[in-house]
View 1: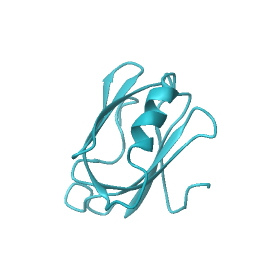
View 2: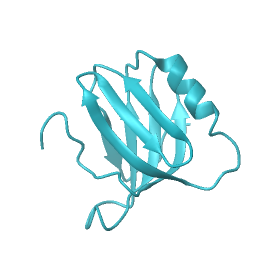
View 3: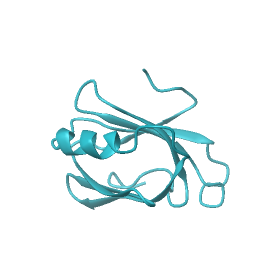
Length: 112
C-alpha cells in the first residue's frame, strides 16, 4: 500500500456517523461495501487530523446533522499532497486540507 492510498475502498459504502473535533479532526464512521472490501471489517472509523480548513469541514458536517438515513459514499481519495476529497451522494463534495495521512481503525467505537 502506498502512503497516499487508503487500505479500504470506500466507494458505495455508507456514512453512518461522524464527529468533528474537539481538536482539528473529523472521524467518519463508515460501513464498508462488501463487494469492494471482501473479507474487510464491517465498520471503519476514518480519522483526518490536523485539518487546516476545519471551519469549512465543520460547516459541511453540520448540514448533515439530524435524523437522516446513512449517506452513500461516492469517493474518498487523495486529490494532491495535503488535500483529500470526500464525495457523498446528495450531500456534496468536501475537500479536507491536512498534511497528515488519514488513519483507518476498525473494531472500536469512536470517542464521544
